[in-house]
Image (cartoon, rainbow, N blue to C red):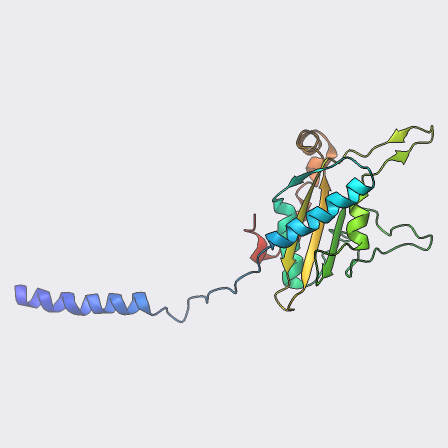
Length: 211
């Protein structure tokens, strides 16, 4: 009886080994590795941003090292090589500029003078018109009564992602943010709470785990 039991155990162990080392045809293949943000290049962009504001005598903004929404959207653009747009046709990030040159209207004003910039470049350490535009976005403005008004952004974040299909090309994204306290109030006590997570619908599946 014991002799019979040993014969049964040996073939079963061999079968288990075969199935554990050789995946079946129905199993999915390993997904392609996604690109990673380039921290060295992000620091270079942040230095340029700070220098532009300093030269313009604007107050410094604190930097958010990792803003999940910005990283995931920049990752999406890098993977798809396409800038998502809202229903209005406005880009989710930036001025609609791809080459870093600010798009303008017929009167010379920015087409979308928004609190973010997004462009492709082979040298993130080079100052572009779009980077300069967003760095100067929180600039003193004059009210009708002559008083100076300062827009309330106090933080910014940078994301730089290499393009997987083109060597030495990067997508650069920069965005301004309210203070942590102001942002909490906006997201919980104003109509911003209805669209604060709208950006998530544009994120590519490969970028949803980026933090």
